Image: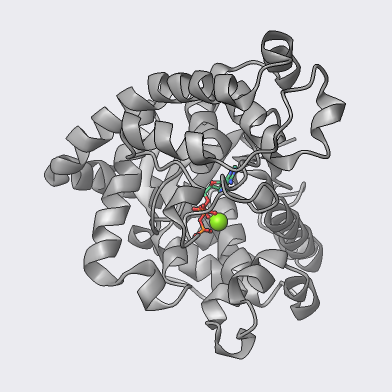
Length: 348
Ligand code: ATP
Ligand code: MG
């Protein structure tokens, strides 16, 4: 591949950051830093796609943007070696999204399940931004020509759309792309990084629904800011079945809630679900749940404490975002200039 290896990913500043965001995304972001140049974004332009009473308005958006940034830093992302910034500070995302709006097809977007889930029954009243979300997401990734994107399993379909857009752009403009010095195509076909336990953490109240920031029940998720007591209480109250843990993974398939708790344990401990079962087969939930709480508190406690400290220092957080945006913009601007040349937009 002629493309420089680069990682991009983002988290929306809406609602409560939760264990799924940590295990499915932020923990992976941290791990990838040793092997890639990474760009980690707080995707505030995505946040405003839902109704204002859901994203919370200007004061809440600022608070949440700083909180996600603090979570990145507290989890171990290095904003000097890599790039941390909020999306709206780099206009290239929105500019490229417009071009991609003219590349993506209605039929492709009509298949996106996240829109169907988030718009619910009142689809006519959903924002156009919510419908267009995956196109902006493709622009977020491709404005940096990122080759790899760590995401939770729920974002897999959007990554496929991103590849479709890149491919169609490369095909539609192949002559111009070559003439502008890119004989192998202009955009990479970005690979998702989705593997291991933790890529799909389910609600603690319903093992068939993903844990989500936007779930109205706070009992459904472990927030990254929850203290030890709250974590223990939520795990104790988590829905389960009456059987003890089995000794093999196959037996978890028909038990979504048990499967979820075992998966959470595995992801937190960096072991496989099979390893968890080796250790805990035959255990009742009255024994397994306290073990899980203890592990969760050990792993999440230090992150929560550091987040709490960092969010107080808004001057520092904002300076990290400004510095990251300045460096991200250099890369994005270069892409926008090339895209304009490829399309035939006259520029200064
Ligand atoms: P919302 O419900 O508002 O979409 P969210 O919880 O899905 O919020 P996002 O900001 O959309 O959060 O997603 C940030 C990252 O967290 C994405 O990579 C997403 O795939 C991942 N993620 C979200 N929920 C889960 C989950 N339950 N399990 C694993 N990964 C998740
Ligand atoms: Mg989401």
